Image (cartoon, rainbow, N blue to C red):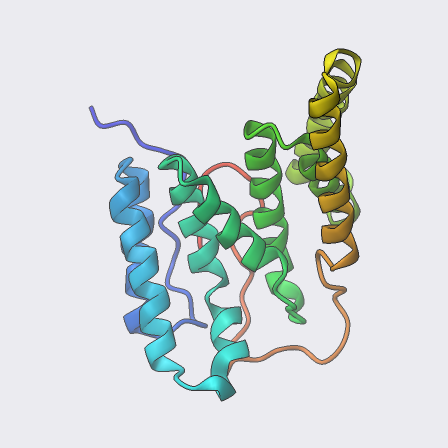
Amino acid sequence: GTQKHSLKSADPNPQLPPEVDVHRVRGNDAYQLGQFDTAENHYSDGIAALQRHYPGAQHAAECAALAVPLRNNRGQARAKLSDSAGALADFSAVVNQRRLQFDDYPANCKALARRMSLYETLGKHGLAIEDAKALLKAEEPGSANADLASKALVRLRESQRKMDESCTPSQRKKAEEEKTAAAQKKAGGGLAPMTGTPFLPGAPATASGTSGASGASGA
C-alpha cells in the first residue's frame, strides 16, 4: 500500500480564514501520502491566500503571525524535497516570529526543533547546538522536544570534538565562522519572551498542534 508519513490532518483552524485553511488541510493530506511537492504547493497557496485576505502593510504583522502553521509545515515539506535553503527560511521565519499569544509558543518550539535537526543533517553543528540549547530553555523538562534536544547535544558535541581533533586549518576556519554566525544569530534573538498583551487575530485562541519535530501538523 501507499506509505503514510507522520502528519495529522488537523481539525479546522478557527484562526485562519476558511479559504486559507483549506490549503493547509489539503497540504497535510498530501504530505501524509508522501506527495511533498503537492503539499508544498498547497501551503504556498495558503500563504498567498492569507496575504490576499489581509492586504496592505498595516496587516503585515497579523498576516505573518497567522502564516505560522503554513510556514512550519511548508518547511517540513521542503526539507523532504531536499530544499534545505527553503526549509531553513520557513523554520527561521517561525522561530523569529514575535508572538505574544502563549498558545502559539509550541509552534515556535516545533520550528526550532525542526531547524535544529536540519542543521545537524547539513553538518552545521555550531548552529544546531545553538538551537538545541534554545530548545532546552524553552521546553519543559521531559517533553518530547527537550528529550530530542538533549540527545542531539550529545551527538553534536561528540561530532564537533572529533572534527576539532582531525580538521585541517581551512576546516577550523570554517568551524570558527560557523560559531560566529551562531553567536550573531543568538544575539539577534531567538524565541521571544511570552510577555505582554496577547495577540488576538479576531478568533478564539487554540493550541498549535503537537510540538514534536518529526512530521508536520498544523493548528
